[in-house]
Length: 302
Length: 222
Image 1 (cartoon, helix red, strand yellow):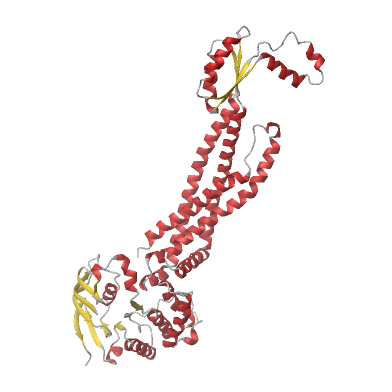
Image 2 (cartoon, chains in turn orange, brown):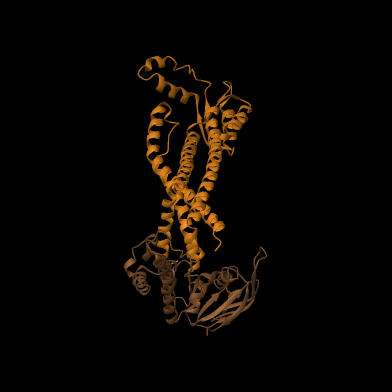
């Protein structure tokens, strides 16, 4: 197609949109709703994933031993744990280290009070292993295995919070997928309808084009451009909205969850937006292009 | 040269539009095709434009058998033919200039070429002064002139006119016919479908008479 013909097709495609502005706006609005939800869920899923990954590096399992257990047996258990493939990191804390850490934290400035315990470590039975796993969802099973080891007194892990986040992430992905699919189907229907109505409007023009030797591509191009532009504008609008809303929402949430700031760390817009925008634009324009292409193929058999 | 050999056309509804038609039209000829409604005139035109396929027989245009023409070549083939209709078929939302330029844009001509060609053709059909007018602001004769300008701007080898004077008064019809003769004199083969005896009788051109899909007469006017 020559540049002048291409320019003509683009102009006609834009004219089609204006000629049929109500249907075009309805189609754009549906695409926008669809892409907005997509971006919303994309942000939620990406951030939850980020939180879970953070949690995996910060939240671990602590294994405590019976007070009468000897150092050799504790080391043996440590070796046994370290050999497990689920284990990312294993750290031993002796009873003395535990007491020193406790002292520093709770007796700061009042060291005289702690001195009373110098010869009698109150945390004598608190030698422990801190374990970080590769996959937080394996935490429950791994803790059960730890409990079954002879000599293990107690296994501490925060199963509910992290596993809950992980579950919620999967559920959100599924739910968003379903909602986006339904909205996409509505968008497909609306774009197809818009292009069909425009095709009916332009029937005589297409007839004349055909008789004076326009190729199939040239007759169809304005309709495909119409659909693609609807998809492009429909996906660009919510992206602009999300770009400005995201920072505000993240700032609000960070403020709200300040107390749990170690766990609830959110992704900055710069690291999420390029992927989100690329996918959203591809989705919107892709749907517009494909739907208009097949609709006009059905309506205009040249 | 256009040659129809033993061409028959039966539509899916069972209507037999053409029966064993044999016609030969030489390059540069001017031919009238006459006949009543339903005689097969428009079907003949559709077959030449390759809008429909004959049920049997063969059609050759400029040495190319249409039945062997690949689908992708059809647009290129149609660019060698200009078409004029009884109802003008101008685009209502474009002015005269843009209606004529439209035919050039469709075949991918550049803006400069269009700017050069359109005024020339509008001058030829006598519409230079009305290039900005919308079709609704033109008389029937002027609309038909604009349609003829659109049909000839791509310099077709063949001009098909389907009842070009059907909606016009006698004087305007004569003017349009003079314009078509002028186009023919410039070397374009012209086929005019009409049922107006007046127009045919006033000319010395060849007349093909169709009746119920059969060629009844195909000869020079005496």
